[in-house]
Image 1 (cartoon, helix red, strand yellow):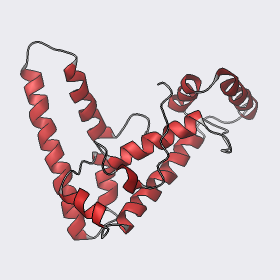
Image 2 (cartoon, rainbow, N blue to C red):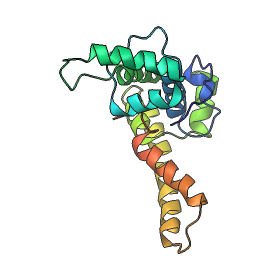
Image 3 (cartoon, one colour):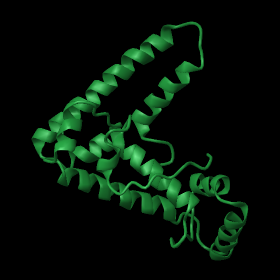
Image 4 (cartoon, helix red, strand yellow):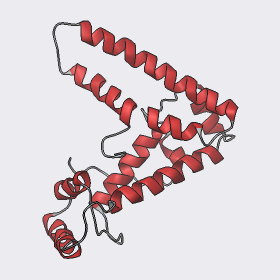
Length: 186
């Protein structure tokens, strides 16, 4: 993991024109902001992924300060407490699903649903549970279409004898479709 430029997205609607699952894109950006600029957020416990993420993305002095606080907070604490960043991500993810569901009749959302829509399986499933049945069937069609395209591409990749760097992009797309972007869901 490395530091990324954090975009100032205020709404899920701001990322509909970007490639891939808009929820993953929004949440990956939100996660980067939490890791790189955690100021004001109370952080008392971190999972393995987010501990290493902070170590990789923070300025050394900021990371040292945060880790010193964690060392004191976690002295004698029982293992298994929820990661504060994971909790914040889950809350934001739920908020963005509800936001999108409330904007179904907005022109950009309707256009996106019927033209360039791509969703990972996790966000597709979450979204289906928060929209009317007619829209849920559109969400199913979107995820089925992307699943079919990935199946064709992966089958072709499996049958090619000479591996190359371009295949890693396809494998990353498949991993993202199956499990959303790395670090967003446990």
